[in-house]
Length: 212
Ligand SMILES: C[S@@+](CC[C@H](N)C(=O)[O-])C[C@H]1O[C@@H](n2cnc3c(N)ncnc32)[C@H](O)[C@@H]1O
Image 1 (cartoon, rainbow, N blue to C red):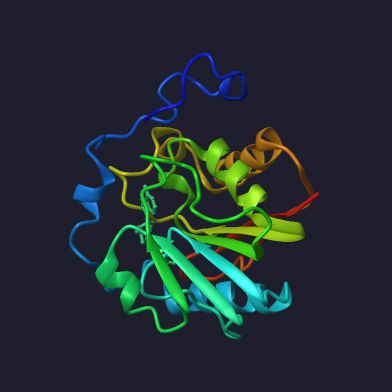
Image 2 (cartoon, helix red, strand yellow):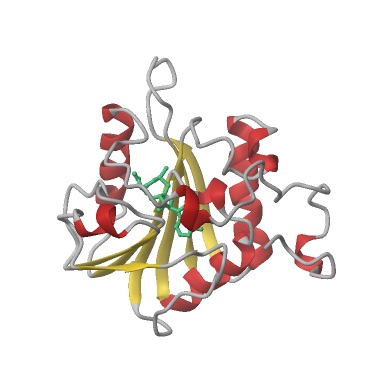
């Protein structure tokens, strides 16, 4: 389900940007649970430290989640949305979870203004209709709520969009910034490297913004 060519908001992304090597349904790829971590411990800690710094609390949505959500301070109510039920039911920070394929249907099954924060960790690169998902994150956020995207330089290469695989870390920051800009209705955008720049481990980048 790549973007329609008549959707103006996607104009300017090069042809094939949102194509993937493996275009089969995501439900096939994520059928088997992967009870692993996708970034190293320092990067995981950097995610939790950022969430703490941003004071994420209340009702929070973890988009494209699995069995770990990386919070140091668990929100009052954490809802995790992802592809694999076995992974999701093992997430001990989650109050509840939802199995939902955002590439099949980018609409989020939640009420307007129902979350204080939305997070998406090491997964934004798999979205083939990211602007619709960003629209939906904004719709589901309360005014002033934050949407936090974190990512590293690792991915499932056959499932990431081609545009992601064809650029570097700076390019990835620009891509996520562009999603915020094009979806619109966000203010106070930030982009930061959250791990040591001299470190040898996985870098952890974060791009976040607030619902206007
Ligand atoms: C690299 S893992 C990251 C998992 C978790 N966020 C973390 O920090 O460990 C990618 C995650 O994206 C989710 N995902 C991939 N494609 C998806 C889709 N089309 N819709 C919803 N979630 C998806 C998968 O369920 C998987 O848990």
